[in-house]
Image 1 (cartoon, rainbow, N blue to C red):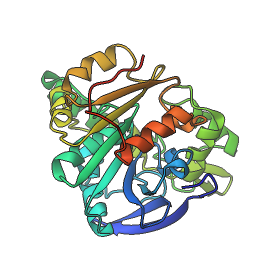
Image 2 (cartoon, one colour):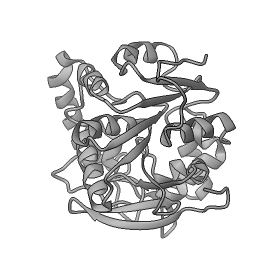
Image 3 (cartoon, rainbow, N blue to C red):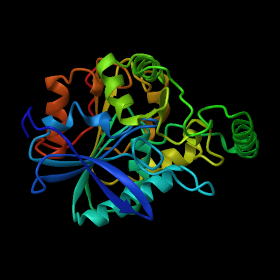
Length: 308
């Protein structure tokens, strides 16, 4: 794929919902499913997808995110629901073998997808190590009660974007982009924030509002426990490549907490940057590692590798 290869938009109905897709490359290339993170969208891969060699990259906006349809009120946004959507999407595309490129929450979706689909050649995780949000088993009941209280409060008070559909949340594009830039890790570059925001903004009468379902900002009633998140990591049988930011969400203790759940052949590489380092200026090393992983061009036996 060349630097000049621009992405294009398509859409597809899957599992009874309408999904917006961002696509790069020729359909004859190696199929790659790119799964973005929480509150992000397919634009998460806008900087790196054009640089992936001999690949056909399909990045959906997950349900409730970006330009994809919101789920019905009696449904939710659990990781396993996203994984089921991705499994159905791959089937709709007719892919017999494919690779997965995931970022953040997308790595959690991918870890569950690996239990549903055994046709995955390899997985590349960018600043993610499976399910990002977990609870302790002993907190399950209290967490469910709290999540329901927050949902009722948001609906009653019109908080968190639950306002009327034509009510603006931002007076200008720059205000929206600034909020997006400072969310999660506070280190997202201006261009990266603009890419994500522009795919998630809707113009209304006197300003702009987010397209994404406001329920996404509230905690799910029954998220995975930490043990379950680790179990889904352990069961991955295809080659797994971890690309983590030295200033990202998994530097230090979070990495140590999950490292023993990684499959033995996992390759781990550390890169300068925060949680969205792939949306900064992509480095040669980053692109080479992703290309080598997706095209399986590594020489010699696979082994755990930490390049700190």
